[in-house]
Length: 55
Image (tube, rainbow, N blue to C red; front, side, top):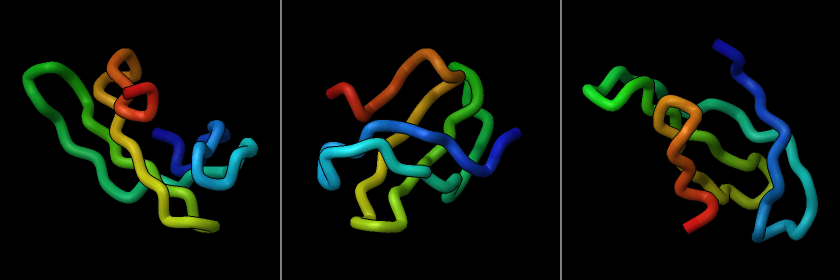
């Protein structure tokens, strides 16, 4: 699994490289926490399909 992810950061208002903070397996799939090192904004993805950054 990758440890870096390019993603739009709503706090920095531009695309940033996010780093994986944690990962664990759930009954829904792999839950991965990502954070922006520039502003500490974080979001969660579950199995790549569910993304808390769009909430």
